[in-house]
Amino acid sequence: MIHTSSYWQQHFKHNLTIQRVDWSIEPKLMNVERNDILYSLKAWQLGETSDGSHLLSAANKYARKIEDKDYVAAVKLFIKEEQKHGHNLGRYIDLIGEERLKKDWGDTLFRKIRYLNKSMELWTIAVIIVESAAQIFYEALREATDCELLQSICNDIMIDEAHHIKFQNERLFIIFQNKGFYNKALSIAAYSILFFGTIHAIWLGHGKALKAGGVNKSEFMRRMYYMFFKTIKFLHSAEKMAARLAVV
Image 1: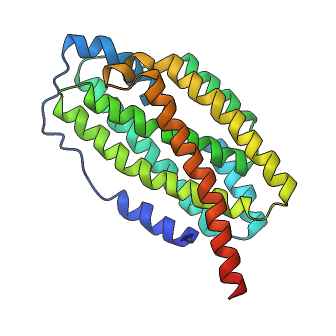
Image 2: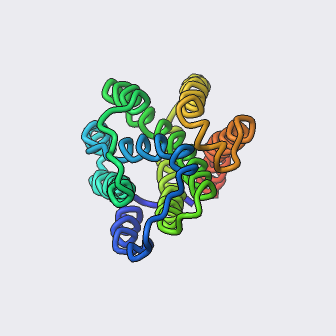
């Protein structure tokens, strides 16, 4: 089922009112855990703090084209939810007496790529790939620590990310279904190149933390390929369903 932008606007609005993190829990991060996960924790926190201005610019341009102002409202709330993740992770870093990162090579690289991107389609597939990796990363982060507060933060993010992926998958389908056969083939090739480069960059930067949570390189790649092909399958299966409904 493909939901409307209005549906997603209401979903994000409601979800932002739910408090899943219990801040009364005392943060306890052991030294061995700090050694394994602290760098990646800080780097992902930095990545979650983007103001989303470039994404919003692309969304505004796209929404005007398809005449769907509710889509912009939904994207604004999506960005707000991502910023909530950054706020919670930052608050945790402060509580354990560590300094937040102001700069990271991975974040700098992804931001530069995003700034050059004006296409809603490429924004959408890029977000799907990163959010899929985030689900695996935060699951590994949760498993790599005995700190109940950090586990609570990770659980909250993972719940949000599952909905984010669905939101973006549905938007990618809407964009994808209006393409011709050859453009669809070229798009799949572009998605694959972006996917391949992104997952290797993420492993290079965060393999240590992933392994601390029980996810080795082959498992990370396997799970990422599964999630990516699930997205590609959704594009085709939803398209077939739409075609059948059109006939009926």
